[in-house]
Length: 524
Image (cartoon, rainbow, N blue to C red; front, side, top):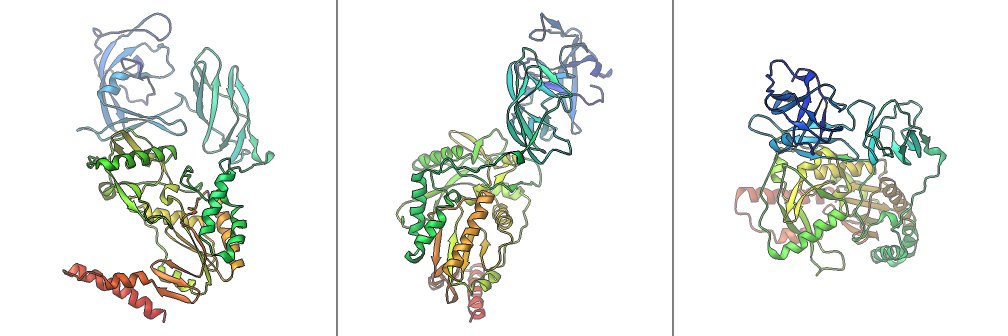
């Protein structure tokens, strides 16, 4: 092909790949003995002029293939067609997305690295390609300076027989539903879209799933984790915020302000065979995968990555010590070797404990499936792929097991609860402790936290939240209304600590002892 930039139609229904003769470089000889009679494009048949062995150049890498040559008046609005023959030859994959960029992926080979070719909605910039009698989702450009960052695209006819449906969009990412009611494929150019300000409308936040039964169940769980003296006031407060709590049957949602991107040291994929799964674990694995699909935490995957899965036990819920709980995790150890670290500092534990000493009452809040409340950027999802006997999947949310997950979660929590004074709450990873000097002070602080959770769409676990305690275990210490003390459970670990048998174990034991001895002396 010549050195100009070319645009191709991706057609999996076409048996051959072709391009127009004006794109042919004279250095490639045309084989006129190898021709095709093409059907299905226009009326009758259209003969090709011959074939040529040429190469597409993508990101300075060549993709050689046999292309057929047609006249420049061939009835397509682009330079050529990439057909099924090229897709099959290179085992290409289509990563299609209705609400974002789609890609044609050519896997790595002995001569080339992995290639991603962007699939456009239209062969021309700022134009819409609309198939006949079809409904499609297309991105439109809203560049006018008077258009707000968020607006309404109302029902309207933008051309004869072309209609747009009501859609609330952001200016930078405006996807709308368009219907072509005509019998013709249309390339729509120079059209105008009318928008309206959302200020003209009342925005109502509703939670249709918050039924009386669900609300009563949440309040019942909360009341069990609160002393009698404050129970009534707490229930009155929480009855206004049941939407910030989630129970096991609820669909796990994600925050509305922060996404995580995964960055790799190189692009070569990680593929590890699955571990052998005990037969008695298969039902639990299938059940958890089904639940994650329903909750939109994972999605089916076509990826060159694969990491093995396994089940690990979870702590039982309060009041249910004999009920086994499992967490499905993916062994990302090989992926972690390729991941670039996400450096975000954790708060200093001693600074937090110093400021907790003045509090008289404590409430400990816990997010439900905390990591899964962070959305993964679309381009990062293939890296998290895993498989079971029933299929391959990838995470749409931040999974457990990635080395960057704790720092990412701390960043998200810090952003969500930034600005909270030391008289209100402290955040360390998924530990959120709310403090108060009195019951009324605690209620006021809890209301503030609930409002932040509602604003950021973070969900709390009612079974694991405790309220109005005079003492709690937090960050390995016992926080009481009389001050900060070492956690008694740690004393038991020290008493029962196994005798070190080598230098590394001895070093670990000394560090463990030094930390608690220092903390105890510092707080005397």
